[in-house]
Image (cartoon, rainbow, N blue to C red; front, side, top):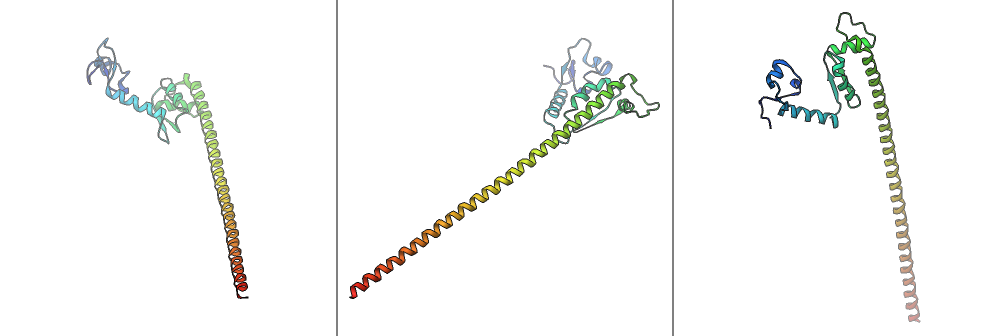
Length: 195
């Protein structure tokens, strides 16, 4: 186990691959690299971002070379809601879109790679829009079905209530007829008794 600040520990992603005074000199020649607490925290944070990010998820990527970041860019394509590319790397993407870059640094040998990435980004955007439209259609259909089910349930409850009211009315009418019949019988018996 490496303690914080010990030789051989990389403290964070930013200096993980550093060389010279920041890297090898700090770690010591030949020392086996190990992850420090900050590096562990950063890796856990990035893992959560890639597996279950809060939305909207916007990635801001900068740097000098497209070739250094293309793997990261492609890995993020299907996961982010928006991607912002900055730094000198943006110049190569702008040049790949046909923008005049003047004396700005452009990786001329990476223009085809940038164009391919931009095409993939457009395809990913179209897929996301299609999936969003499909989800909205499914949500609308579920809401329509819920309304139809609620209406059908209300109609069924209304019919059941009407049927109960009819049965109650029939029982009340029968009870009234029985009462009147009993009164007639009682009056008839009284009449016979008077004779």
